[in-house]
Length: 287
Image: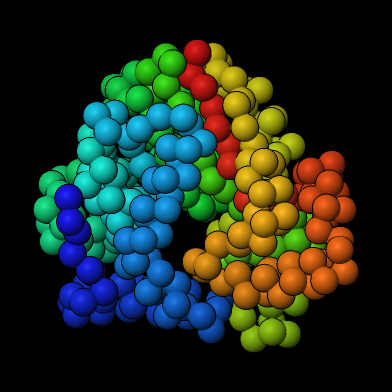
């Protein structure tokens, strides 16, 4: 299915840019690039390719749910790829724009409903796969979100959650190099010096592999961890295959220096041993 270039729709572009100006303008000077990236369907096609490769399955014909759908671009691309796909998004303004985008792309606007990941409005064992991209750190209760995701996944199904690792040296929302698990009070002081709005930091959950292990240990639904994303981290470092989406400029500069000094393999080894790889790609099998 051929999808329209949403970047040519002035009404959609205006809505998305205004949303990012309000939400991200105070925290990063690159908010307009983030808005433009969101409307580029190539990013969603890459996500689908990566998801299918990591899971070893095709989305065609699968019942798929995205938690935290934002403006619905992934849902639209997954629909075009043949999935029976739905999404949940708690922000009403984002939902309204998502329905416009789905209608523009020929997907049912009702594919996205307004709901939070902590209380999914679906029956047990409803989906073959659940995915979420850079959302878990924004939720009120990450444990409830993962428990709900497992509840609505059928036995034999999979969960695929991409989450920033706050055991790493990168803060993706502000686009800054960051100390692992930096105390938020200290972090806010740093952000003020950089003339960035520190209030946004309060909305972020510091997710780490250790915290996720503790959360998963408390969830009763039988499951097993298939991956944490370490292999992807190694491949990106050693191949200098860092994503072009988002605010990755500082990371690319550090990576070029590491390559020039022939330190890349050491960085990859240390990242794995210290669990500072980025991002976490948590893949769970529902038993």
